[in-house]
Length: 507
Image (cartoon, rainbow, N blue to C red; front, top):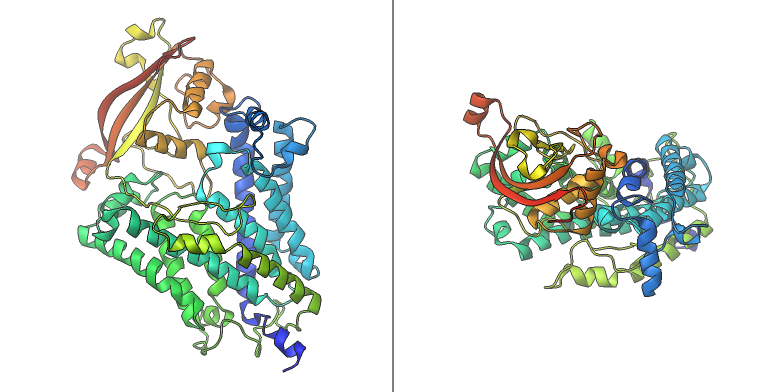
């Protein structure tokens, strides 16, 4: 076999549809992520935010800490809201161009700089995002952004090595999550975890209550199904077709179920997109009524599915293979620690092993909470807050939090409500987190930026004279309770845990 024939084995001709889905889908997630940042970052981390990025960068410099890579260090000022929005606008425009398929029409390399620029811009934002950007799906998006551009344009066949790396990423996502569950909480081992998940998850969706009220045998099947897919079926993606496509399809089905029953930002959508790296064109054609795909290796050097215009793709040029090999080799070199982490008794969840957020460790819900506690912030306009009656206190409402008992949970994912997520974490361990103390201060000032992140300000912009923080225990109303009251929720008051007035810093 000559060199040309050997190199043709690296062309995954039967994955042209998968490439389109992955590239356009990841680009869409970037658009959503930059849009979320445009709207929320200035209020949370901007010049006058809760945890100002300029102050954060200054602290790093004073302590001699390098921190994450960010373009803000090279700007005239350490950070500005104007520069942030310029970066978001560029990111959204590039992402929209990829969703429309414009870079894919050029030479093989044209997709690479587009995705690398989006990755670099979002990495710059993430590096100063502090606790508001400390979620596993942020690293997922960065890893995808750095790699997906190397799938190439329509001028070349999808490169097998990049698809294999994406499968390795999917294995880290799913098997890592499965092992975290088995190691982290006996509720996953005795199959009772899903008895609580739909109730206690950070941000329920419209179908979460119905899912929670399903019988116990159903919840046992949910938990068992999660283990079967994450610990067993996921390994099918490393086998020949159509087994790889079957394994990936099972992952996609479980992720769709999670999307329907909760709000996990773009976690589920990104996992679905990465899973397409194992789904071949013949398998997709079979789903739409074509013949059953034959057995084969995870690539198709012989009969190609053809380019997007129906023609057969020519063999990729030598320089393209050399570039892909170099990128793949670099990613393999970074895979040692993540591989060890998968099988470590001290497995890390949602961890990055390098500053560039490449080849990360993933996982979620290693421990399952059994009660749903909610922190509610109330304000008053009473001249003396300490003497205010109950009727003078009114709650600030958040878009993704339960709030009023009659309010049905909404669907927000794949959009990411960062403040709402941190309010859920706060309820697990109520305390004086710096961002929460700053939030109370901003509410006392009637800050317009923070008000725009709320669902409702009871005082319509007027600064309250005092605030109090209450803790509630929430549960879903049973079917009988909902018929009687019309309420979606039932709650128990656990008391006032903090008070604050103008010029007061009690907590």
